[in-house]
Image 1 (cartoon, helix red, strand yellow):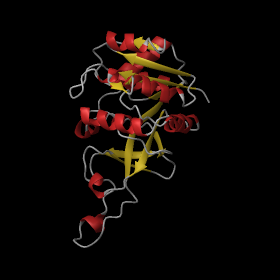
Image 2 (spheres, one colour):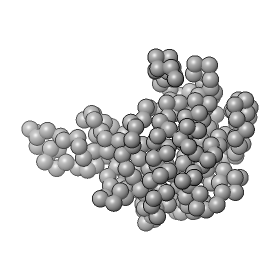
Image 3 (cartoon, helix red, strand yellow):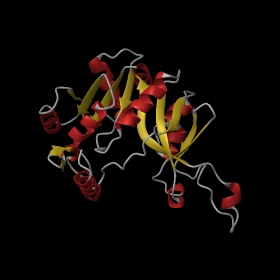
Image 4 (tube, one colour):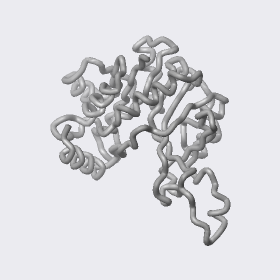
Length: 253
């Protein structure tokens, strides 16, 4: 199985400016992500950035970096540009890895690529079991339900599936087993990435603010299964960054 990993690395960040270059134990964050992605067995790992400072920093540890346009409205649009720049065949499996996940589990990258490789769907992703009741009702935790054939049925910020007995009774306990949280790692067939950006925006994705609902709305399948490794949270704030640094210092490679 061959697949390519693309890591979008935007310089701008409201809560943590210059995030890809944040120092983590002597390396910029983006280098940690790159090294974890390389450990997945990908045939190629490419960083796509929109800023010269990130480009220059990445060139110090790899030549696999591309400068992309600044005016993209979504990460998927940036992926489509990279697919064109690399002239990837339409059947090539592309895994999109976020550039703010320095504790990325390389096993999950391999897993999502393999899931798509074994399917006819144009897209695949992962989930993890929800273990705390508060997360069921947290709109920032995206829930997903799937069918017996590992096809995603729906993604929502709401508490899906709706446990009628538990939620309409004062005494019944909420059973967490049916709840799955979506993990934001995707594998695509390269040709579908360009198809996706031509699809009309769906009313569901606008309501939920979830881009992947456009795929389901237009009748395409998204394969999904539980991640082999529960992923660590990404870095959005200085507090998140401090936690990652503490973790790496306490768990040296």
